[in-house]
Length: 475
Image (cartoon, rainbow, N blue to C red; front, top):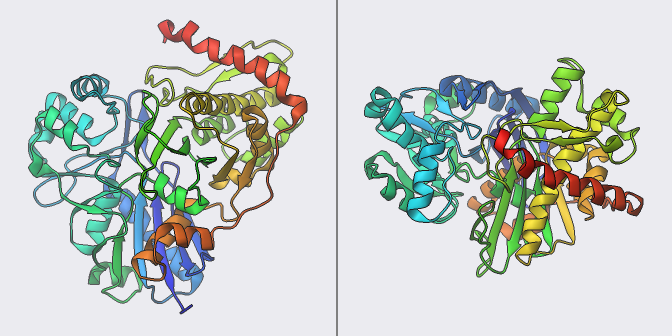
């Protein structure tokens, strides 16, 4: 196979990362920086131009670490849904709005009722409608609404697009825009992931010390789960994909559409005649970050927390944690839900709380699996990527709680790996995405559930799922 290198970058809720990959999916370098954004009650906002500046820095860092003076393609993605509002000169009208934002709850409910499909508060259409009612001056300046990856790709190429996975797998559902009575003109032209957006402009080629004209390909439209599916090679009905990160989602292949409020279900982007089903909990990595900062200090590590938790028996001494620190997405879909420690006693210590936090996230994932099973999805194994997948304690706790084997991917940066596969296919190195994924993705040893923990986790889980209905009226 000929020499091939791709520069890929992903703007996540916790980190902005960039990497160089070769044609065989080997990572040659990685650079990252912590993502900065403002989170206050219902609002989650970011500075668009600051993020772009940080993106250029990490892309340059990845190039320098790989000693790469040229690449064959560039692909940028971002967490989603997230919204950027641009004026007629293609400058941001205001700060961008992140997926954790829940200000547009009323607009979300209005649109969901009108089209009989759940439209989250953080979808661009919900937020554009909120701006129309609450920030009229900003709304009147809007010429385009896009997602961060679209704005950043525009900066690199000069072409503004609206990246989508498919007509149904998109943060810009046409039926919702019609229901909102928003002008179609504020939607940039549609482009599908892997398609050529344009070529790297002179200005940014110079900043990156790259030749101008390098192809820039579309990412997956803020649906970063697509990159994770590729980076974990999850294309079978009995395999679940666990996408770890700030939030955490389980993604499945289904033979039919899953009609459930807490599940996003659309035609599968890779498998003809099959359906994609996914549900995301709002706080996973973010809950760990909060707990580390609050109980261990600013510079503590996830490994320290999990090492302490490993010394606590399963069940955390009957301590139960509801991980709703930023509301909850799937499966309960309640932006007003709050985090809870239930059953706290004088005998509990920091390490008990640490394990309870981990187990609470595991129980939230188990709730998603229960919904999947109700609709005929019966996973036999879960493939997991993302930085937390390196942690053996965390993988074991999840395997025990869900009673399903977990299989980590060798390359934990699965989103970046997926972006490299998108670029490789777009460049003609592989015939299709599934072929590329199955040839490139490699796995570590399977982590099997510990049968000795089954009874205690069944008992605590029963308590866990009873707590939200009992407390919801107080949220």
